[in-house]
Image (cartoon, rainbow, N blue to C red; front, side, top):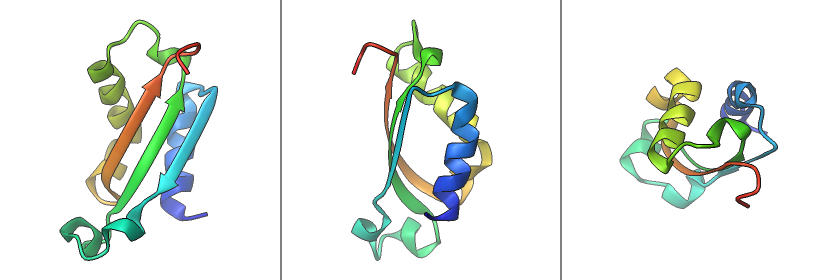
Amino acid sequence: MNATIEAMKARLAALQPEHLEIIDESALHAGHAGARGGGGHYQLTLVSPAFSGLNALARHRLVYQTLGDLMQGPIHALSITALAPGEL
């Protein structure tokens, strides 16, 4: 597994996920400006009690905040599905 996915999983563990899936879609974006710069494209599905009572925007902000500086380099694009338990 690649180092960026491992780093993402380590940081997202703080949200106590009930389900966490990260798919590296970087190969689908070969030649894209962000891909040439080394940033990857990822699809994230995360089910966490931390999302209970939050709207979609607040959930995405929480994910971005948790990932921190990974969003400034190793991650160029991130597609997020953020759900509270029972919403799956």
